[in-house]
Length: 66
Image (cartoon, rainbow, N blue to C red; front, side, top):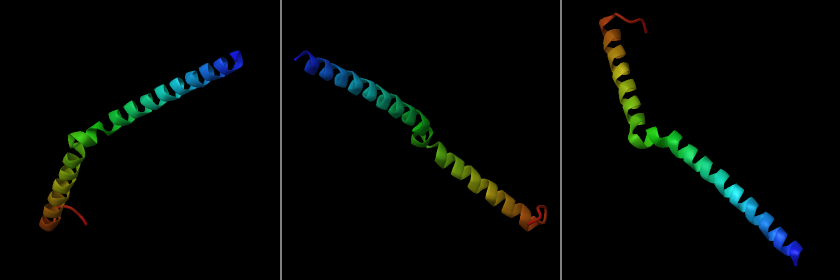
């Protein structure tokens, strides 16, 4: 009977430790992906499109080599 209780306690402790590790990983993932949620990726794409358009205009004027 004592062995069963000890086994259950060990399993419970393992589940708690695993759960806290998973929670830490989820929090880390949320922190990493926050810029995507805030729309910063859209800003970067917009900036890249603007830079490409500017380079194309400069190329048409003959200022930048292809």
